[in-house]
Image 1 (cartoon, protein in one colour):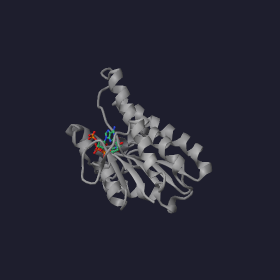
Image 2 (cartoon, rainbow, N blue to C red):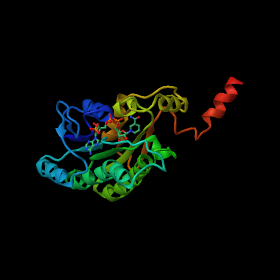
Image 3 (tube, rainbow, N blue to C red):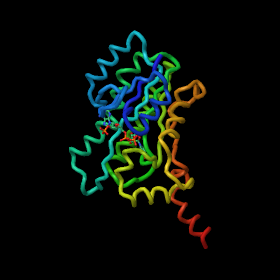
Image 4 (cartoon, rainbow, N blue to C red):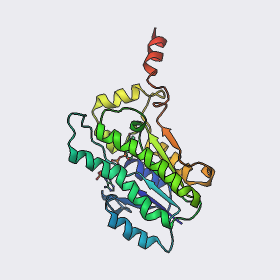
Length: 231
Ligand code: NAP
């Protein structure tokens, strides 16, 4: 039995697929061993479900995502909907299509974000990631009786092509808020995703695990601690 991984051409999704031999890798972006696939396309999910019916996947990992750094006063309705289509509708469509095939013991992981635990300024991205939290909790409730687990992983600042496009000030400020004092790696996120796919996490569902170097843990108190340490 295999694991379906979206967003597998790049960054965290590529690391997850690399950690899971035999993964069915999907992405809109081209890459070796990755099947062209748009997570917002319900007919593509239906076709995939048809193909996998005879040998259903044991796991589904949603890494496909898009960011938009427009602020509250700048974001357009169209751009807002586009971000939500990839980050929220995509995981919903994937769960709707594949969960009915998945056996007891199967595991679904959706990659959220540290932005889902804070009031991060890019409003379309932040609201989409908060919506992922609701999706994971509702789906865990719905699928628990069938023995299917659904969890979220919330990465902090991770060095990937997505964050490479951020201004240098963004990276520096994010790391300044991170107690471990560095960016994370895609492999460090993939390791936690992999744990959630295994039976070692057999009683974990509806949960959210930050993989953020402690950034969500201090609730804004890091600057106070740092200032007093210096003083
Ligand atoms: P990434 O390197 O940009 O990878 C995301 C992949 O998803 C890209 O290949 C992208 O293709 C693909 N994608 C976008 N729209 C898609 C669609 N409609 N259907 C299928 N694939 C699509 O980003 P990443 O940093 O690895 O991010 C992976 C996930 O982690 C995202 O959900 C992101 O929000 C989340 N995350 C990342 C960080 C971080 O610091 N890197 C932090 C918190 C959360 P294109 O490049 O062609 O758009």
